[in-house]
Amino acid sequence: MVYKIAVFAGDGIGPEVIGEAIAALQVVEKTFNCPLSFEYALAGGCSIDTYGVALTDSALRLAKESDAVLLGAVGGPKWDDPKASVRPEQAILALRKELGLFANLRPVRVNPHLLNASTLKPEVLEGVDVVVVRELTGGVYYGRPSERRIGAAGREAVDTIFYTEGEVARLMRTSFELARKRRKKVTSVDKANILATSRLWREVAHEVAAEYPDVQYEDVLVDAMAMHLIRRPRDFDVIAAENMFGDILTDEASMLAGSMGLLPSASLGEGRRGLYEPIHGTAPDIAGQDKANPLATILSAALMLRLSFGQDQAAHAIEQAVDAVLADGYRTADIAQPGCRLVGCKEMGRLVRDRLEQH
Ligand code: NAD
Image 1 (cartoon, helix red, strand yellow):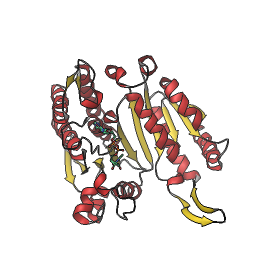
Image 2: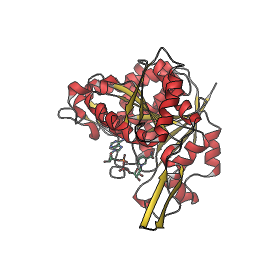
Image 3: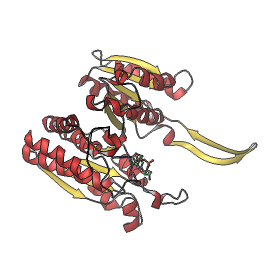
Image 4: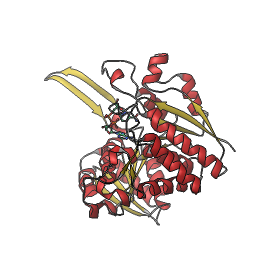
């Protein structure tokens, strides 16, 4: 079986980091006898420049006909006009919606060699290994009404949080299934003391939890969670949260690892097809300078091998290769420490491939 990958490199540093991830996958192809095919299309600002839209119908079709999507990042100052009707991020929103990708997984593992890269104390960070599972296609980002208007008291605005029990249940099931393959603990985040949607969330979460008696379960209010996450991050395994809470907590969690350039993500739906991308954006400040850290994208490719293709060994080999390069002291500028061996994007990619080839 040949796994078909739709590749959207996107804008800014997207093509640089995607290039290194694909080169790593090409080594995996040979080493693990895991045939892959790559098909390329435009998404984001580059697509707007070429076709006038952030994602063409044929690019979307390519994604739908593939086993997985690998994405760099989209956007940049050139397309930043808030009044523009065509915007780069429409490509990502369309891909998520059309592929039914309702769960965004962001693993945060603090690498022992990078304990000093974070602003938090090493003793708090040692051994941290969490995955935030964020609901991606519901909640306040999609609820209607969402508008600005003129009311009796002048300018006013409204947004709406809306969830169905089915949306909550599928997100919780994804979280419990994931926890079963890890340390068997789910922490569900809500604001059930205030919000009706959170009370539904908690009710449904408890019903799903009853189906997984082997997995430890707890509810935590979102404000308390923001605190616990930096005070005792080691205590958490899988953290499940609705869209906006998850959005905020995933960024907070990313800082445990020290740099966005290290963190991969997966967006999943009901089937095995997923969209894999680094959590960072297009980094216009360093684009085209060979300074980007490609590890987040290389690790996203590892997640793709594991979650969409079931190639656990190959995924593990990539993760080990990344660990080995970091253990040898190689660092891109975003994670550089005194005395490290400073390398660029291309060199970092080559070092990972070298370790993979030795596997
Ligand atoms: P950003 O993530 O692009 O950059 C934030 C900071 O982190 C910058 O200083 C950048 O140099 C650094 N950084 C990010 N990734 C890095 C890497 N791999 N290696 C080294 N350093 C890295 O966020 P931003 O500056 O807020 O956004 C820039 C553009 O990216 C905007 O147009 C935004 O809309 C877009 N964006 C896209 C996505 C996406 O495509 N999923 C996500 C976030 C932001």
